[in-house]
Length: 440
Image: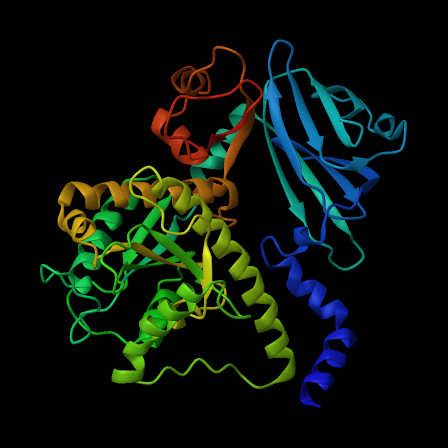
């Protein structure tokens, strides 16, 4: 009866749920692409830039990049239509000489701004508010004015909380040579912290800095206190059969484990607090808060699976992967609303060869580097607003023969910053690839 009432309530607050969904990354896009329509284009002039606002009747993905000789800015909006001749209502001015539009791939909209001078373009989406619907905002900044604005802007780092599993009176699993899981996870955590802190735009914080016991609830609380954008919990797997080997990544599941292994592992990792202290993860029983919590948690799980996939792809270059996909189970340490979290089983400490690798400093460094690459690739796509990794001067479409060094020199930015902003770890650019030019 309670569940039935709750379902009715969910349907009755569809508007409230819609607002919550707009705040959850990836949740709205899961419904499948729906063609959007440009309903109007508005232009306004400011001291150092010109702003164009595209009024849309729905959410639409887009990309923006600048070209020289002649100067122009190209806007691509996926799966979107615009009435013929709408661009003609935007009058030419001292910066925009003309605007033209066309259809790409039979479904995408391309708008080209022909300009009288070089600019730094910027774009962002606005969710419906008041009488306004979805809006795509394009700012065309004068180079000089834009530079002054950037220097004054304060952009924060993304924060990654690193949780070394077990600790203190909870040693975790023990290898045949006597290696304790709690020692290995802390060693890798410290190497990972050092690696991440060397990347511009990212900051790592350790949940456990020494050999001490921490309840799972306290780990979650500490990650929240740090205002973490991501949480990575490090562990070392064990199994009665010493032949079991490989790395695995797990995300939270609210519907049950995705495999028997995931279920057993979750029981093992959660057992520490059953032995040494309770875990109270209850949320406020008020109906509205429960609905918003559920929506937030669903979005967080989707982000966790995305993060896990990136890290797993990089771990394949370092160690055998025990599970080819990110697994899901009910880990208590991952139950932190609004903080995408993954649990990484670095290897099987019960396997003699993998135990030896886990004790090796060089192997620990390889694991830390692989995790860092995965984290960087994720945040290059989905960095939180207001962070350096979410900020760009403009976007650039790679041409044949381009290199990272050449692009960095052309745009007068640091080569390592260009790599950090785009999650690049090799000079393997492809013609047509769109990369973001970082804020200097």
